[in-house]
Length: 106
Image (cartoon, rainbow, N blue to C red; front, side):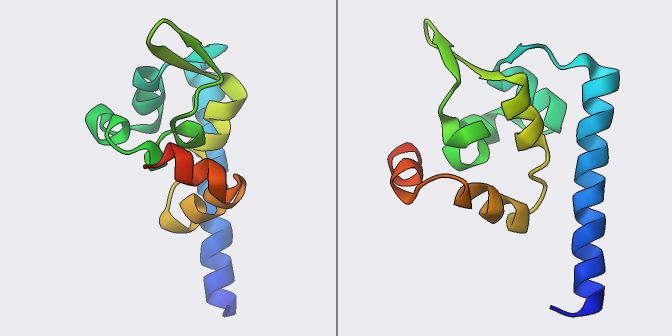
């Protein structure tokens, strides 16, 4: 990786971290977050995210479920908000075992 690529990667990571911190401090992320609120926080289209589990926090696996609603913890959402590009998405995917991703993304 060239020096300019490393600088761009670092800047992208810093931008994501600033967004997460700003959202957490100014927006007040609740302790438990629905997919609707998560999409609102990230500025993503709800139907796009609900239609593709790969775009959801933890590949669509909630931290808790009440009736048919999925909820994720604040920390899970903050981590997910930092995933901003394809490179970040691949890195995020590597945190989960292959079997986990295969089961939850089919």
